[in-house]
Image 1: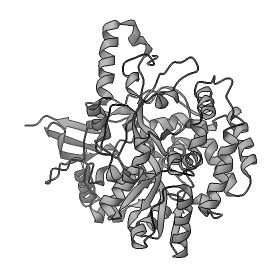
Image 2 (image 1 turned 90 degrees about the horizontal axis):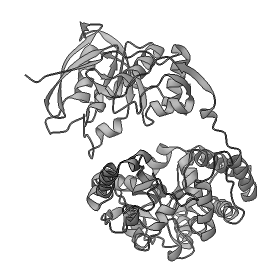
Image 3 (image 1 turned 120 degrees about the horizontal axis):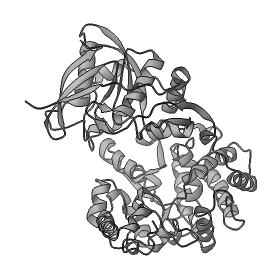
Length: 523
């Protein structure tokens, strides 16, 4: 549905709607809450060495030089990732991208016909690559840094060995609260403070089905819902304490202290919404890495990026890897999610483990019957999972399930909704819902027989610890002795997507689901 003439669209700063405007004038997506992704500075280090926090690009470079004279890395980031390449490439040239020519190009690109893709223009984008080339030199990029991922960058930052990194306001807030490293957001710097910008992206975006227009009562109801969602109260609820900003004119979400040194950008509405599409992500990473390795100068990078953009083919969306015969719903039924069970059964069988346990939402969509490409497999399995293998006794498995199910004495609860209940394969369990959203673990069985406390089982664990353990979320840390026994199955560049791809090479199908959980009535 075209939302451009609705009351809710009128609550937005027009510049943030322009990036979603089609050439016809239609706007079909509305952005919710601005995540801030910019330069994070260790303020404690700046204070310790009496180095002023920079307010423009020249001062940013002076700070890098001052720290490196002290043996401290001035700036570093996790260059390996596509989002880092995309954001630093755009971040160092936001004034160009926000110019009239840059905005006109973006509208043409965003609303282009897939059959006639829009290439880079010859006014704005050559300047972007020139500035990116200079930026890499200015931050003292070294050969090999393109392989840096998250931990080798954030650990030295936590230890005071790196002064500035590229990351989010959420990261800055978390490091300040949990590690005691006072961290603040700095903008992407221009020549003067008036040229500084924050790079942002929406927490999510909202669209409305065109069929709503067919029923005036339904349309009015939907518009009322949208106004509630994008109200100050609605956006604060969505933000849930995260340090975000708003794209709406009359919504004031009090900025976190980590954003205090970016207040000028906030006041002047210098919030740039990153340009992000499947192809832009992939091409940014490829071309940026070629620049980092010295394969291209700015002109060569511009030409290659343009050639790839106008002839882009996503290899993950083309090759059919397998044909799924049966469909499974991701709705949580009386015995759990069929789709999640299918995935965990596939991983367990392919890896020849006796028991598999998935936690913290391992599946994000239903499983359909038909041809699957790699891109479609990625849509099934949630992205931020780790996989571990261990040998646990039955008694230790009971403790793992206690960690994942039972409410704790301090009120912490690992299950915020039923889709976060553990998904087991090779083992079944029962729970009792003692009050709404609070569960107590019951029986554990293997092939219908009680789990043996003294027996040793090979166990595959798939999930994300962070959500369960973080004090701002579930606040349910895994017992350290159980954590110490597991070994990471993903090493190097091996990902959960590699894992499911390898599993499907063995099983040829996402296997049928099983009834892994039964919720018993209380009393």
